[in-house]
Image 1 (cartoon, rainbow, N blue to C red):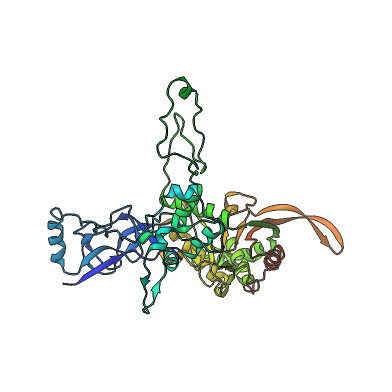
Image 2 (cartoon, rainbow, N blue to C red; image 1 turned 90 degrees about the horizontal axis):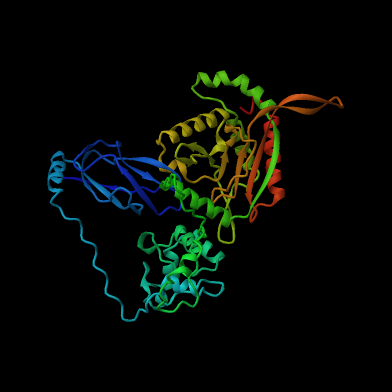
Length: 467
């Protein structure tokens, strides 16, 4: 009898855990290889995960709504048909697995300070995060080469570089934050919640006096909105709880605004030449099943020019700029339930036909939840297109850990001053705006404007040979 483990897949760059949103099969159901078996949900993608093999789903180890580490076994498939029926018959009598027994406390370990105590007495500014007494008292842990792992190294192992960077910028002692991730890992959401939580009173006695009663208490004003901006519903309001994708997107956007100093530069583009090439090529593309849009031309111009402006196709490391080798364009797609950014890999190597086909395909599969987790990660630059809804232009938030994002405004016919043979005249041209939001820590205004000037030049002089 062969058994196949069904695991939580890696869902994105630097993501260590995922949420199982829905099982598409139940225990005892037969499954085929590559048949969708459960759904995952993250801030980047809602995706159906296929079965790694054929057989019968005998065990469901992770329930709907649970968040677990990547590579965690969430279920098991038996390859023999009889195994499924046996497992299903035994399922009602099976007791849930007992939780692991807590480890006995170490006699040398000092008690860890409560989060409120850490909030009352923040750690002083210093070049390296201080270790809490509990972390200092822990004995060194052995590592692979026979050496020992210090408490500080253990703390770094339980947090990502992004989390440590956020902690350093806000002078936060990571050991004072309770980690909700796998094995006590401190996640970016833990840091954001720690920052947004109101500080505890600095001199609160152990036993607070009883709350006031009577007229004085009745006259006290009602509390206002919290520091996080939450509001109380009024009578008649409808409250719609956030989905996981909405909540994680919100956290990601708040983090991006907090981490990156956003600067915007806006260029006006004459798309008349692009429109002429598009009119001649559109029928040819349609015959091959590809819808040729203005976005494909813009993606082509961006991909061709990012190679010349490596600082725009970059990310921020630890006191360093990471210049990406690959040019992978994220194309934002608006969905009824949120926003998703599938990625066109190696966009600079694709023709106009290849880019148009990739954009059409990714957009359609994003709307039908057919994207794989791999198709929404490793983006190096993002394009968002609110112009399709009529927006003149926008100033978007950078998609971390990238350093820039391009916004495409609506493209419309406008009267424009033209100079012909030294004489100014007014003509009707197809015009639109492009806005670049960039991280001013690593991208200077002059560099951003040079990149945008080259994109403008490429679009306004687009030739059929470039297609």
